[in-house]
Amino acid sequence: QVRVQSRLKCCRVAKSHSPTTSTMVAARHLAAGATLAVVAGSLAGCGGSSKPSPSPSPSPSPSPSPTPAPTPAPAPGPAACTPELARGHCTQCYQDAGKYSCLACSDPYALDKDAKDDDTWCTYDCSKYTPGDKVPYPSDSPTQNNGAVWPGMCIDESVSHFFTIGDWGGLCDWGKGNTCPTDQPSPMCNGQYEGNADAGKPCPMPNRGGGKGPFISSIEGRVQSLVSNKMIDINNDLKKEGKEPRYIINVGDNFYPGGVDSHCGNKDMSASSYQFANMWKAMYPSPLIDIPWFSVLGNHDYGGVCFLKGWDQQIYYTWASSGKWVMPGQYYRTSVQYKNFKVDYFFVDGNIFDAKQGVDPKHDICAKATNPGSKCETTNWPPDAGQGPASCGVAGPASQDGCYQWFSDLWSANYKWLIDVVPKSDADWQIVVNHYPPQYNIGSAGSSYMDWSKWLEPHGVDLYIAGHTHEQKVYYGDCGPSLNMGKTAWVITGGGGGVTSEMLPTESGDDDAYGFMDMEISLNTIKITAYSHGGVDGKTIVRNSTTTVPVAKVSDEELASLGFYTSTSKTFQRRNPQSSTGAAEVVV
Image (cartoon, rainbow, N blue to C red):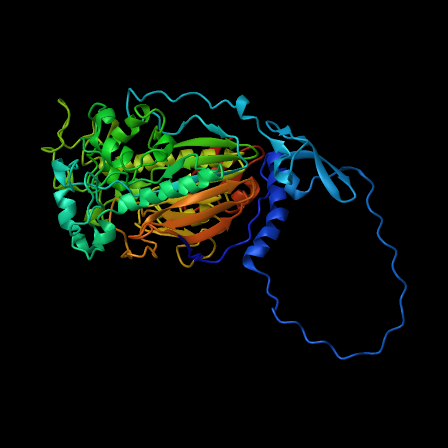
């Protein structure tokens, strides 16, 4: 049974691509403008009435006027490419009786003379794809690959799918006893959720009402399984059409209550981690475990209320998972080449938001009382010999006193990297992945402050994928104060079931508390479909279906006018628009 409840969270907005500094990219982006204006018009509607207009009163017939001579059709021959063809990488076109065809394509695309539509005149041969250099194992420090380029992948499809999920890895007990009995439900889970836990499987960390509820036990006792089962169902439905998802975007808070159960700075034990084996592999069996999971760290992956848990083990596991778990550093990027378009992904670490003095003590990663302390006891997860109890060793933070500065330095480096690499992207789509939603501005004024609402759209970011708040939301357009990211679409996919949701779920599954999202991506659109957990009957319920179009990356001159850059004859300086000092970094 499929139930569709398409509820657009806010208005759709017409969007277009505009020129970049590259000539070929400029042509494609300019092409998107005309093409997608038509698409957006159909999404937003253009007024009009459903009733026939009344007939006007008859009037005297005017004197006949001469019939104008028809405009002669243009002669067949070379012509400027239509916006549709230009976005599809055509560089030379031919027109005959108003019908346009493609004659040549920009590198690395090749002309397909038998193309069935305007999107696929120019295609890429995946057999010639070079993924890039392998990223080395971080033998010196888990932070050594920050900013790395993870080898890309090529998918020979013009329409493809990927899933998104976050805040998903549950628990079976608190403290050192966080293991699941194989033949019976966890006593903690069964007690918390009134006998509704499954044998051998985790339950969500009870977080609602300070851990006291209320809870909908028939759902929440096994909600991570409900979401996983529904992901498998949708995967199998798509596979029947030859369109199964090719990878998963994972937005963090991967293991509750406090990340991998190990002390940070310890030697690599990720291959033998109970949580990777039982909270990830066992909970997301084939086919979900057979495709890459591109991942970031959330605040609970550092420890939630401390920084001392095994966040570095999640980085190490990249080299123990046969390429299926991907997190080479705290921030990194990768590309996916498709048959007729390319996507650049930028994965960031925004955990500075919960690593600053004065925040809620329950969310302060650097709190003095818990480094070490309650829920981060060194008696449960001791450091290796020679390492202090309140230290992550060579990777840092080296002490509780230095924790706030360590996260500040981490974001400062992440920020400089981000404002450098995103403007250089020549891909058809740019997607940013962060644990924190974009209304969470982060950084320090004058040096690394990021107001996402001012930064995303001008830089041509098409989609922002986040979690952290435990719900499923889709935003596109002006959604109100703090929720307006301009023409950049953004989603919260934090309902994976590792922690109880912000809202109460329903037994019917008609809610946005838990679930995942499917993204159907093509040259001209990304169709976002938000699926519910399905309720006690495991129904397939679509909570939201939203189609987005590319965002224009403005020119360097326009970025300068917005305060992001200052320009000289051949140099642009990246400037923080919130800076009071005007400090700038020279970028040639």
